[in-house]
Image (cartoon, rainbow, N blue to C red; front, side, top):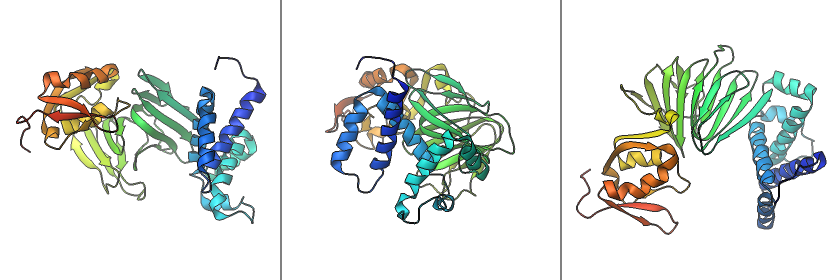
Length: 333
């Protein structure tokens, strides 16, 4: 579709359609035909996809609405499963109406400001509404919401370095996978791939909780420490970084693999790939790899592995590259 300037009415129509599809796709009675119609609508124009993603973000904000608060605005005839639909309507209305927005803010269940950020082919630096600075690695998506009792970042995927403005009465919380990182003012890095998360602290202190269902838990990190967790971990694994630690090399466009087993290196590599690389077996995962690579050229790293390691590449039925060890070359576990 050729580029043109949309009228306000046309833009409003797209926004209304995005809200409609957001609610229909989350409804229990949404049909396969409706989902197919949605995909056709979404793919018809880049702005359709953009507005739908924005509406999805508002939906997630509405997910933080307390059910007791939302129930107060539900019609008596509304089924209980509809609370979230009304929640998103309340969120949209509150963002549009100053008085409603102030009420939602004062109750602590709606943000006073909301921002979305994405970095694709290059590292991106942004300043949040509270003055905190964030550096986004390639392929990173996050959103920022400013609530009355906390500043909240939701890391959708990727990696980000945070330099948080100090505010002891207004904590800064980064939600990543099943856990969160809570600070008042500090510098730290959060890396995430699928359900794996690693937090590296440079300055100040942070509280890392691997399970959002137990918000009172968590482990405090001091500078030079790391915490790692995966979905389902009751508590994070704590370790000390070493001199020359390369986990922040991405800020200079580099991925450093310091004599890592392939099983450890692949999550770091796959973070930059649209199609993840797989291992043929656990023995292949024990082969070690090292080197410094350009984060914008990780695809070429995969194709050159057979030149530097005793491995060869195949593809599985899903089209994923698979690393196989040459016969008789796999190290013992």
